[in-house]
Image (cartoon, rainbow, N blue to C red):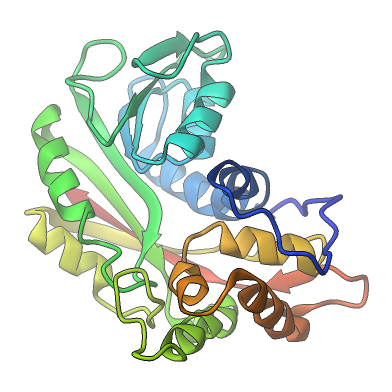
Length: 294
């Protein structure tokens, strides 16, 4: 599956929108779809369908949930980012009123969807049954401390699932297999330019071979297989690429160490080797997933 290029996102010299709502929309409209091949590969392997009761930790703006619901799965999404969760609600629950309480709705393909705020998992799946699949599609292994909150979230979620349920963790592949790593190194360099250097959680770091296995071990999960998926990042132009990449949060430490306009400028420069003659930007990447059993 090839990511769809996003049109009509021209790059301008003025700083891109930095408020939370604009950033969430950049994620939903530009960046989130780059991981669609990962979603599809995991769902194919796990045979996601009408019998699936899925809990999506860090569900973001809901694209992966939408795909699972289209396969007939009953899905519950949890995220602490209110702006992304609001966009997920619009996608999955267009008839829901407000955003302060859990909501659920049937999907045309037969699945059901529910969204929960503040990182608190629901007591059961949307149809009242325990979960048999837990997914984490927010890739880890590319920022310092990016798994610290995940381990307790997994420990809280596992008791809500049937014994022997599958848990799928995802992460970035080896840096040498990810063209985007060259651009992400800009984040580390700019964070280090501060005095003293920014070393707080969120700073970019190279992916380690056993990042996913380490999380599984700390969460008390037993690995039961893994895979790699090609997820090229394709953008209509440099401006779209800058906005999409900054929406990931991987450049936040760099923005705090310098300023957003400088980060945008240097990211745009780092993207030039990946720009094609027609102005589009293309960066081949490999992502990993680890299947675990509770």
